[in-house]
Length: 510
Image (cartoon, rainbow, N blue to C red; front, side):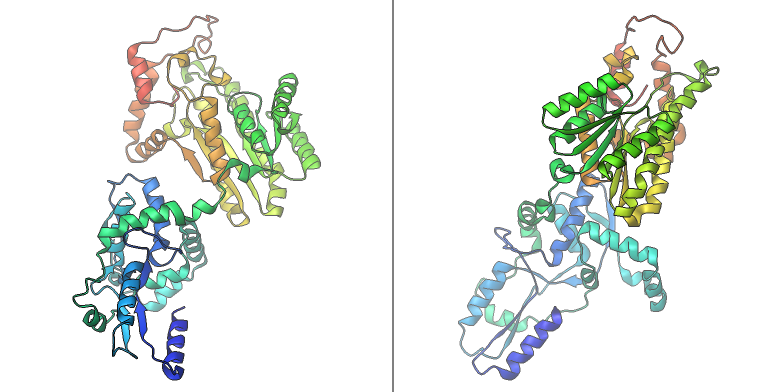
């Protein structure tokens, strides 16, 4: 790009027979008053990165960034006003004018200015690449050319929308001589405004009009319309709420469940609302039944685009009451882990062949919090989470992806036997289905609540503290009568202390 500018200027200088004047603007950004711009270029390439950091971290969290060289940024209105003025001056033919900022900012300063404009965290520490000057160039180049480094760099740049060529400007060394421009603009009032004064205007215009995500279809319909989507346990709770959303979005919806009558009833309801629904009975705890289900789906539909492993079994029982109930662990693992893995392994060959497929696993916040009383359930979900991470590492380059949803407590028939949950805050199935829809549309590695992520961080940094918090909740909330072997159906009394604790820990299993 830069070479074409030099070549074109050479043509003019050597061949032009009419008077000419040459203008060399810096990196041109939007109008300093309106932010208006018709293209994404220069510093705009870093806006998506800043936006992602803003979504991930509070503004007050300090971050580490780069220092870099100086980038010469000028707003388009300054360039136009300067050109208009200079074009009408006498005696300036053949001269060259740098329309630049005589006091440019370093890359790190620019990123901080736009971070503040976009309400993102600022880089409290900026690292200068010259710190690594002692490393021989051939070693630096060798490291950059390592296959994993190249793949990571490419993936990161693609995710941020940054062209690789932009990296060459990070340590841009050029300084521009603007004395000719300053001479002809003296006392005209035409000058480069400071970036801090109009950065917010540029950011606002970009986010409203130029953000590449504005031009992507991020709707559920745009993602699943005409695609084969399989939901296990699709007749109640989270599975049913998700099935309704996918049916409304135009998916070729495949639902599987154990009870045939309920399955046919739900299929009829979904078809009545306009869904393209295919219902197949299956006990997902039976491996032979899983194989029959996979074969039927592939025979009838050819492939699967999205698999939602939702069917599951939860057991809330203290270990002290489980010493003679080893079958609890076996049956929970059989459905939650082996059933899901059987389906993944059944549908994966076609996904890999087509280089397209997405698996959504409904896991649990208990995996992050190490929920007491749920050792059988949490262990089965942890096993599925780990399997999926391993599979994702194998299939990353074949576009077969996994999303784990560490789902908080949801008001579903699965938790109905635990009457104490009637008095603590929970998510609705529709709220949970929104999380599944986000997983299908955006395909992140994981979806979890902030409380769940905080619990995982605490477990990593201060495991004993997390253990004490969970033990406190364990002692505060008793086992249900059925878990203790009682047939009493009486609703337990809930104290204000229990309600307050559950409200603070909203969504965590107790």
